[in-house]
Image (tube, rainbow, N blue to C red; front, side, top):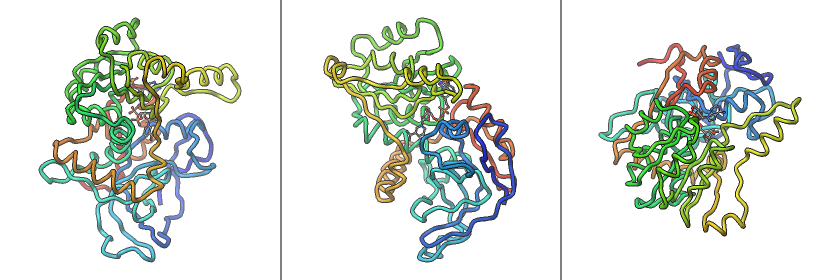
Length: 348
Ligand SMILES: NC(=O)c1ccc[n+]([C@@H]2O[C@H](COP(=O)([O-])OP(=O)(O)OC[C@H]3O[C@@H](n4cnc5c(N)ncnc54)[C@H](OP(=O)(O)O)[C@@H]3O)[C@@H](O)[C@H]2O)c1
């Protein structure tokens, strides 16, 4: 089958389509014929060798795919063959076929009125929406009266978080690195916006939120953005750290290690005590290890999405062969919402 096998770390050019053996499902597993792949920022970090959850080289990257089950392993109901599913995994999705535990192949979600999401919307859903849901609901313990901050708000996880928090009834403050992205997230329900790449943005944020501050922040940039977000937490407020997009270092440059260390989100107990607030962190990898918990989160999230008529924001669709360009686009910070890669023979 065609797949992208990562055999060395580096720039987007290391992502080349090659031929590898087509996998067969083992006991308790299903095999999915992939129709589309959703791109995640963690895959940019893995490609550079900066992602702690990545396996040893060589491996096929890719954390989410959508398609149909075409073969099942021992112990899996053969009636699942033909089912349209979404797969969330640690790696393996940059390929024509992906093998996953049966419980990891979740039924493709449905939109508000019951009609199916498009293939691209399915590819934009699993990782981003589960991350946003767990960050806001399970960790942030959101209440409709809370004021919520999301940064960066214009990406895959960010657009999901803005839509979820707004639908839940919260006032949403969106942070992003471009005015164009901020205009678009207003359409998802953000009522206050700040561009953190403009000089004086911290003052602009303080003016925007006033003395009331924010109750829950979902923060995924790190560095100076995390510092600015932390400074506007209200008493009893909490910041949920789900990522560190600014993370960048190279082995041969000790200054870059120091910069990466300095930019790592952190909050000391004395600081928390002074502000009566706190810091939490979440990683979807822990959820994916626990099928029962995944089923619970999935049930609540998909019901919420149907009730509120929400749909993922698909910003860009590229052919699978252009994976290197997709990575370049994500790193350029020019992307909005989700970047989706379509397999050549995928239907409408
Ligand atoms: N904890 C988890 O389980 C989990 C799961 C999924 C994703 N994440 C994290 O959530 C964050 C968003 O992931 P995503 O897949 O939805 O990506 P994304 O938001 O679609 O794309 C990344 C965005 O990060 C912003 N950014 C800030 N500093 C950057 C930098 N130095 N280089 C490149 N981009 C930078 C850019 O937005 P602006 O131009 O607006 O700054 C860029 O568009 C990432 O940090 C990711 O690692 C965590």
